[in-house]
Length: 224
Image 1 (cartoon, rainbow, N blue to C red):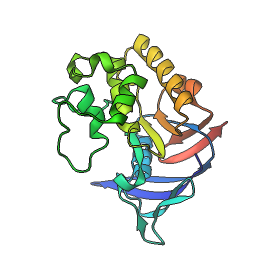
Image 2: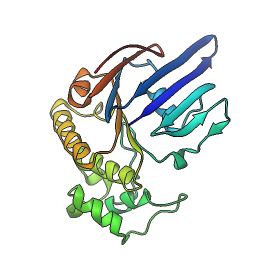
Image 3: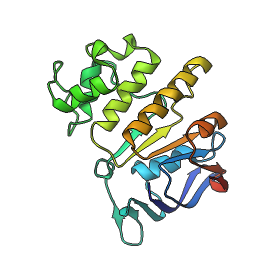
């Protein structure tokens, strides 16, 4: 992945302050960051994606500078080409599977037509075995189908890396094991660099070619 970052961000709420200060370099294709709730994991992921701007430091991926406070570089999120998978998948409830996937190709916020005909959409429908549910809406899908739809929407834009924010936290134990296995198979097949944040050591065991631990805004130890 060739991730190189050194960032500092202070968040304030009344008299309380939280400092995120993280420095790391990793060449891992599958990086997992573990930590308790409130450790700063989601903030770190947002800083990489461009959804939060650090006060100081830099973020580089694959030799490309995404953010550098000293050089006044702050690439817009859409130009960073990061596939960001939210915990709840953030599918559009009024769009069917085909439209949700096609949304990843669009500029702006216009909805894709219901019968979107695009080679890339057809590819991901087949790749993720979603063709049978292509006209269905998120509420009509299983948890696994929703996750695959969200992944297809993220991957259709050919991202530099896949960022996953607690992707299994909302699932029951059985579905969590099933979806870990599905994601593991997909990532190995597609070879898209992946950074996953979690509080669950089982996620680190399943995906952690390299595992980092974040606590109170600081990396405390690393394995891998």
